[in-house]
Amino acid sequence: MIISVASGKGGTGKTTVAVNLALSLNNVQLLDCDVEEPNSHIFIKPLFERSDPVFIPIPVVDKKKCDGCGRCKEVCAYNAIAVTNKKVLIFPELCHGCGSCEYFCPNDALKEEEEEIGVVEIGEKDGIEFVHGKLNIGKMMAPPVIRAVKKHISRKKTAIIDVPPGTSCPVITAIKDTDFVILVTEPTPFGLNDLSLAVEVVRKLKIPFGVIINRSSLGDKKTDKYCAKENISILMRIPFSKKIAEIYSRGDSIVEYLPEYKEKFLRLFKEIKKITSR
Amino acid sequence: MKIAVSSDGTTLESNVDPRFGRCPYYIIYDTESEDYKHVDNKSVQAAGGAGIQAAQMISDMGVESMITGNIGPNAFRVLSAASIKIYSGATGSISDALEKFKKGEYKQTNGPDVESHFGMGR
Image (tube, rainbow over all chains, first blue to last red; front, side):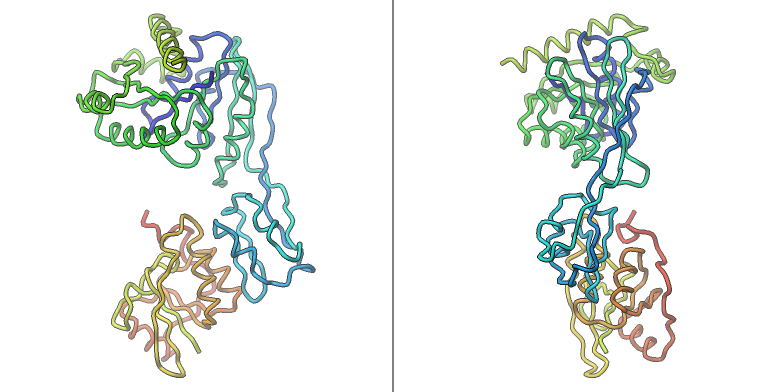
């Protein structure tokens, strides 16, 4: 089973939930897909055994073959190509590596060269298989790195995915084809607003999901009301606790210091299994 | 000679828009006929590469000189490749800007004067 841990708003506790859920289970993988700033490794402290670069294809013009017809810029959906004075200008930072320009070039004047945009690191800690992606500084294409991380998903294990925050392409790429989405939120106006956006996304992708309310003893009851109205199950509540904040700020895990949370996360996992087997 | 000005409206009374790639309109002024027209800037809605797309459109129209508020690196590269002279730093009404341009009060811009994404309002 693949469980993704997502949220509309950043800083609600995705990594806390993903890490502590992984630490509570056996035969588990944790894949950090927040490739713009991965941080699960801080809490898992894995020993990395492998590091694989991630490449995307970037077009390069063969000036001898190019007649400046401009077909490439017409088919580029990302404004990564301009053609003026019969000269092709390529802007690699905007290229998504889709290959359309090469495919449609009538003169076979474009060929693709691999450009490294990030890295996937694979490691292990106490039986947890750990994988994360890191997007290189200055690069904008997170989805190819996320896809490279997800290639390491093993169907023989329970895979937990730490999803980037928000509701845009990287989030879609991370939660696509997963079996269940945990949406972590906090009971604040921002938390609720971004939760409702994330709910729309997950419903569109038709993935079963539930909500965890973090710092649940703070804020207001509007998140509860929203979930009741929308018929969304609240899977777990993590009350605000100075103790948890201290554990987190040291880079430690909750389940190690507060064993009652291991029970809570195991119950959460059972609940998710029940929902997905329906 | 055709001159393009980034504009917040559709007439000569409109103001120069400080954003090259994400202004709503361009005023295209013809120095021979002393006539003008406006074109919509479709790049306003572009997710990325607005400056590149807008510069492509400007160069496809056979413009020789571009008057605007600010120009980013990608748009600058495209306009330069198209041999379009760039005059950035313009403010005020379109008619004033054209008048100043004709009097030679603007200096040609030799490089981008803002970073990418300047016109995205953040």
